[in-house]
Each structure stands twice: as structure tokens, then as C-alpha cells.
Length: 208
Image (cartoon, rainbow, N blue to C red):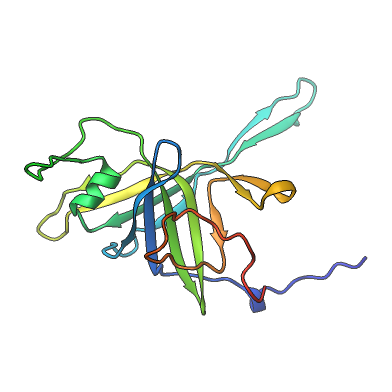
């Protein structure tokens, strides 16, 4: 059977400039918990989702210079963005601050507490939206309080995407995918009725 080269220009997906960055905290069971945040005060050019270099090691061969086998460990996905907003709900949810109900004073944590969130970065692509979905981001968030004469106080929302098992389909047709990130090429934006930011659609988009 002959092989043909595929030209990509007619089907290319070249995206830039996010339109939305969503986040929702996860509880200790990994389930969606609390409000879905649609961050609007995001510092330009601070949003990154990059994969660490793969880690490669080799099993050396006693009788040859060629290794017996190369072992490759995939690099983790690292996410970061700067939110120029320190409202109480944000620092409590993503930075681990605690609020005293009587005085409404908000206290910074004295030590790191593991927190996880689902984060979605949405980028327009013509009439559709492409979404980069991290179903389980272990947060390593910090506050930014510096250069206050020329900068705003903010939150550096960052973390490492953890692999999560996602089941698509049901019964005999169910398939499990263990993944740190999902790409949805026809993403539907959440509404006020959305309760689980990490819920994926169960069918292909109409017309596909």
C-alpha cells in the first residue's frame, strides 16, 4: 500500500492568546469542590504550560559500546500563571490562607499543605475553543509582594500536573486513560450550572 505525505495547512491548529483560565479546587478524594474561578486579572505573558525534559538513563553493555537499553522517563507538565488579584476567596482557595470568621482577618499558612486543583486554559481557534485541561494539578502557589511602586500584589498560581485515571464510556465500552493533561479541540465553556470543571464531554462534537 502506498504512503502519502499529509499536508497540514488545511487542518492546522495554531493557537495563541488565552481567552479564559479556569480553576477549581479538588477535595481529598480528588473530586471537584467549591467555586469555579474564571480569572480575569492575569498578567500578560505569564501563562506557561511546559513539559520538563525527559530523563534518560542507559543500561550499559559489558561487551559493546552500545547500551543494552535506553530507559526514558517522561518529564512532568509544569503550569504557571500570575493572577493580579488577592481577594480573600483566591488566597484562601489556592494559597492556603485561613479567614477568621469574626474579624474577617486572613492569615497566611505557616507551612505547606498539599492542595490540588483542576485547571483549564482556553484558547480560541476560529469559531471553536481549544482547551488544555489539567485534571489534577498539585499546587505550589505563592504570593507575589514585590516592586509595589510599579507592580500589583498577586498570586503566582503554579504546580505540577499529576496523572489521573479518567474513564470514558461505560460498561463493556469503558476505556481508562491515565493522563496529566487532556486537549479538547472543541471545548464548551462552563456556565453557572457547571459544578465540575474537570468533567469531560462523553461524545464527539457534532459535525465530527
